[in-house]
Amino acid sequence: MMKVPRRPLPLLCSLMAACASPGPIPRGDKPAWVSTPNGDVRFPPDRFIAQVGTTSVGVKSAPEQLLAAVDAAARAAVAASLTSVISSEVKNYQSVQTQNGQTTEKLSAEQRVSQVVQDFDLVAAIEIQGRWREGDTAYAWAVFDKEKALTLQQGKVDDREKLAKDLLAQGAAVEGEKPADALRAYARARTEAAAAVNGGLLVRALGGKAELSGTMALAESRVAALMGELTLSVVEGDRQRAAEGKPLPQPIVFTAGLKGKRAVGLPMAVTVPNGGRASNVTVGPEGKAEVRVDDIGKFVQNEQQIQIAVDWPGLLGVSADKVPAWIAASPKAGISAVALKKGVSTTRVLVLIYERVDGGAPVAEPPVAEKITTALKAQGFDVQNGQGFLDKFGAERISKMGDAELRAASRRVADLVVIGSATSRYSSNFGSTTVWHRARADIRAIEVGTGTVVFTAPTDEVKSKRPGELNVAGRSALEELGAALGPNLGAALKKAAEQ
Image 1: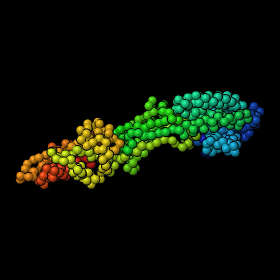
Image 2: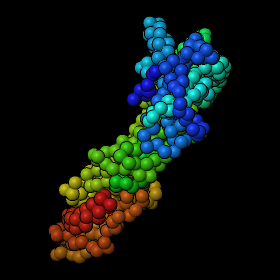
Image 3: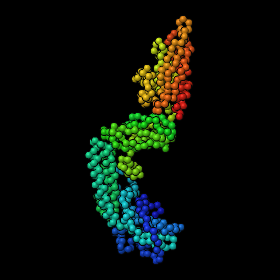
């Protein structure tokens, strides 16, 4: 009599799922099958696997619960016996594959055995032939018809091998123009071919004959070749700031190509760690996709990686728990974008102020921008060098930009932009040759991601401390204006950076 192992192998789960119909368990004389499960002439051992399972009656009061438990034990005993036969066939197969250099996946023999059974329904071939109870122990006699199982599986193996070859042909036909569709066909072909191989191993274990073709290796090589030509690139939305648990202000835009073509229709999975949330996306007709991060999650550090990779469940049309092991174990081809924890130290600021003195010479080393920059750096802000921006657009044009145009132009280089103009004008005479000036700012600070104006300069004019000729007095007034604006501007930007 074989007793049920305490820790059944994975393949036992499906076999234990079937339950018997409720009914009484007979007592009386001990049946012969309890001691010799294969002793019945109706079930010769060359065609049947027969085993006995037992369970303790204990406090089980409901008849259906007792029947389910003892029947499951008997099925598990049969499955354990069958496992040994399948395992031997699997080891032989893997040994030959290794010797021929055709190993395409790293699976243990136990994992392969589990796959062999998971792909096919063996429950239908296991039948409960008898039950008996003695004291507190219940017995069940399960018989597995190898010939019946062989008949069921042989046709499935042939069908899956044919489907795998058909899918390979479909992929080859569209690879040149629709590489994403080809990848889907090849991956499905690999899945079907693996199922055919597993089914063939089961057929062999049951005493039948099955040729294990090279379709699986061919399909996997085509998947690998296409994945080797997958190109992904983030074009917008990298290094955005966000507070914990909040969405990113702008979508992450990336491009995807396969074999030099746009990867149209390729599903992509988006993973945001630490409780974050974002929906998966599909590459559009232009070869682009937009990822909207609804929740950036918790920041362990100041940077959070958002991973974008091929969505294999979406590509194959299966649930995540049904993704084949060879895909789960393969290297992940993808890209990542970085989100920054919202705060002063991660906030890039661009200071773009057009400064002038009425009637005077162009203002060299503009003092308002210099004073503001110094104040913001003292607060801990990452103040960017705006010279390239100024060279590209010109200070006067920048000062007149609308908010939408400014945000679009500065999105890749800044999170906050201080923009506007500062003008120094004649105020009064100081003697016959010198003058006083007063300076006034038309300056605002804009959050690039949201377009929110977080600071607007007051309308007050600031007087120069030094009278003198036009340019001296004019510069002095601008210096005082910058010194007056710095603290209030810094406080407003700090508040915006930390919200």
